[in-house]
Image (tube, rainbow, N blue to C red):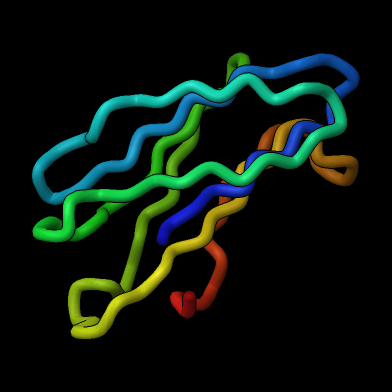
Length: 104
């Protein structure tokens, strides 16, 4: 299972838009409205026959992406974990990151 933890530390609801890019192109975009002060985990799953390349995200006027590295050579099942944070207290703009490990 691959997931993105969406974190909204703003004082109002925000809509996060996510698109998982694979070697076949970007899968459909999904939108998730996250209430103020809430963390929500959402699942992103490509077809088993294609490798993920990047995760793209948009919230308000921020657009970013995270390249997915090192999964092409993995022969076993793996999980990808991402964080997408809006108004993180120590940052001036939203942040996207892949968690370093691929363990489930």
